[in-house]
Image (cartoon, rainbow, N blue to C red; front, side, top):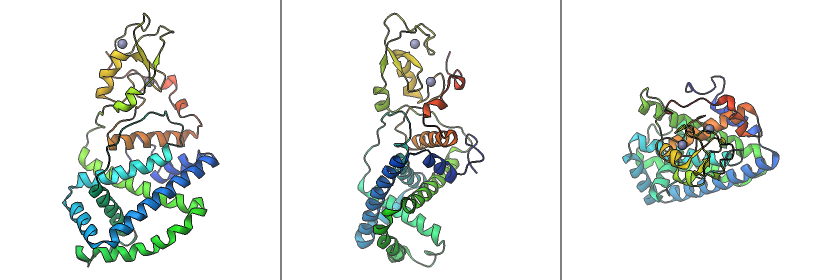
Length: 299
Ligand SMILES: [Zn+2]
Ligand SMILES: [Zn+2]
């Protein structure tokens, strides 16, 4: 079941497909190119992992030592980087966020975890009778067909985008399932906006003389004012403490990028859903003034 804030009619697959349908042919072919490059990188890692018994057993030992929330984080990072392949072609405000570099052993463990999930999806009983020491050869058999066919599938975009959509949806299902276990009924936690995104916000002239929604004072008189991508503006001195606590606009809850992997997935997924639903060329049109409601935190 999908969370309450999402469209009850939409499955994750239809959400991704609807967002894909808004892309122009050049955007679609750019996406296909980046998905293909990503897939080649992934297959190089798979080959390296499966051809080296010592690398494989190191990765497996590391993976088995991780508690479920950290396994979920590995998959979440993979999902986030896959989602970004798509969302960078969508009309979203170009604000940066910062992802810490992935450690080699985490990357290998993530590659292995993805392989195991894939195997379980295709053949749930494949590892039933095998001891962990035999998993490498089971995975080798399972992957050999994929590794041989990868070279030939770039010519047809559907051939590459269908497994991409399936992978995004499967990773998201996994991440949502773990999140639901951890949240235990609590709402979305507040997360700070990415400092990189905040630094990239533009300063603007407060020509209109409107009111800052945080301090309720006017924005004329030469006080420094910044504008969020939703076009709401605030005194810099008012918005900075705000975005250190939460990544949402005080007026309309527009979300700035965050450095939190899970929150960033939710933000991009929400944007994907809105864009797919409106089929609009302009994501910002979904942030019309009628959307604006004063945030509960505003005095
Ligand atoms: Zn203010
Ligand atoms: Zn706003």
